[in-house]
Length: 400
Image (cartoon, rainbow, N blue to C red; front, side, top):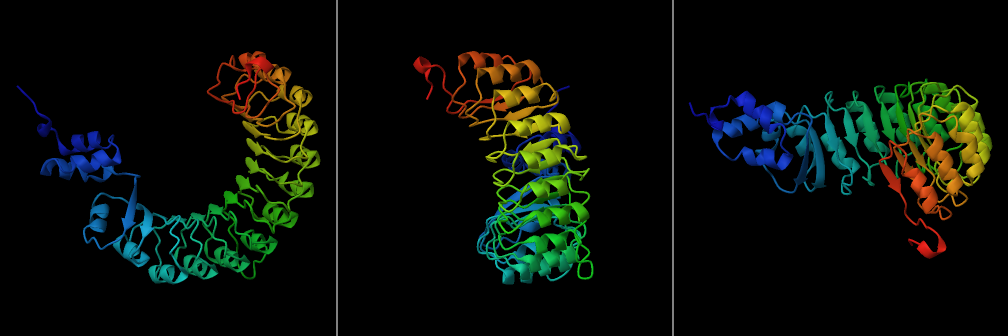
């Protein structure tokens, strides 16, 4: 008996269609009525994010998304009212408005006029017209929000963070990159230091404070006292953070990743504080901290030997420092030592002999390594990623 694909049950077709990419899922819906019905099964679209250009009215758009069970939306260009989206998708779970430069407080205010309990993720990064006023609306109507991205929203102030701390108690991830008006006071609000006005966002697990120039060590004190569930902390380019602040972080037992890239006041003493506490870090980035040297590697080997990722780009480390570190770092998988110009073939040989679990290494700009050291590195059994930009061999074999 001859069988044909049209004889398959709709559930089987839906299972097959679920493996297709988004464009092909749309194409199979145009083949025939049976395939269209199968392709609209919610299992085919589970977890996918619809990317939309909202330029003109399309009455069938949101009913179609709801039929397929799509609850995540990214708006690529917003030429219609945001309320058009919210009204069309009352059960929306994720809304990405990143880069919608024309979004204003007024537009957001008209969209968020009642509670939206289903919305868990909101990305407003680079929506530069958004101010504290919008955060008031978000805190009032998005009580279940867990992920909020405000990166590049440069008009946000401490008042906005007070509103967030007042209304968003379930928040797990907050990105405040380049919110340069935010100071220690705002971080205190998030950490529950002003309980009379706001409970705080005490469930935070991921906090990005990159390029928040007004922050000092007092912010780290607030974080260590109030944000006990924090796992990932990004302080890169925070010039006001110093070694003393590392004392506050050194006893945050849940913290597993710290980014201190380009924190100019972090030195070997700060790394010593981190290493002598009770931290169980798996990731540490001190790239471009020009006061970090070989002493830091010794401290890391003694107290942070569980690290799986370590970035030291442009730090003043040498082969001697590598020698003090590698014998204790058996779990290290990623090592970034690009532009560490004092590293030679001897350092690479030490890495090759002891860091046998490495899957990635950055040697960009390590100008003193030669073919001999490189050959040793390429013998690492687990190595998958090797960055050799600006690498040079001997004088007669120069690559660049």
